[in-house]
Length: 366
Image (tube, rainbow, N blue to C red):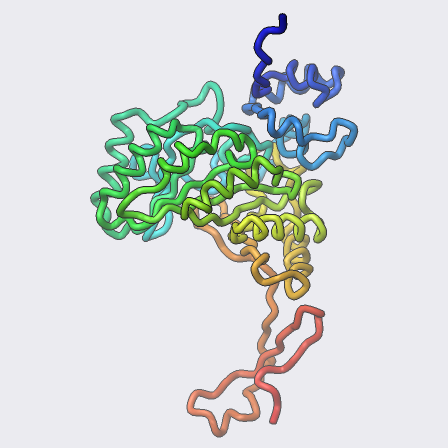
């Protein structure tokens, strides 16, 4: 008589990656060195997506350790976006006036090889805020009535239990000036079964609006299970936006990026941010150049629905925040328009590029 079916487990050891055929046996020693430095976790949902016959598989490239991660460049840094610069108390990053990051946990369902917080998350690190630190973080939010939005991040906030999430959501919604609670997560694509009806119910709260930002980087991540997980949230009234990272060998061509953005929109998720790769340690092999990113954004503009256009952004190292770095379609000619003599507010003359690359003068000459 057969016993109960074995539940697939998340792969966390280099030897497990080799045993599952996700890495060659001769790479085991290298994998162990990388795994000793940076956390590894590959869920069953992600394992099923990896094409073991493709040495350049874009899913594997996001999650399977690479020897190049041990090659740290001089301009890379442990805290590439400067979280610590804007951390008034443990768990809070107050970089922008009307919103804060609230870092509740330091664990994720999966660990991305390009993570900008890779020095802060995973086994061996603090797993979650202590009760005392959590209370002080709430006190900080209560004391700053300019905070309109609280962004739950980490780590991945959907690694918390539904019960704990409900408590946190209620605590935040009870603060009069907090009107938006946004959660940043990989869970709907990395571990979609975790997005249960109970979890979705925990995210909905009286007194504040909930938004969820989904991190996905390749259209293959939208499995039937992932689509269903997103639908459970959206059908309950939770709007979703996207965030992706531009990654060499994953989504750095127009066809893949177009398919990814269309996948978001087809699932009622508005493309929000396309991040330029951060200067996290050991990630140079995954970063593109800004010029390459701008060329890809030009390729999307006009050829792909406006619903599918994310903002291409760079987190300025040192904690100075995000800056839009997409291509520029506008330049001044250095002249005034022909209508300037008749205008109450004379208009400068501009060259404007259309999506085909052709230039036009604005305002048109009379």
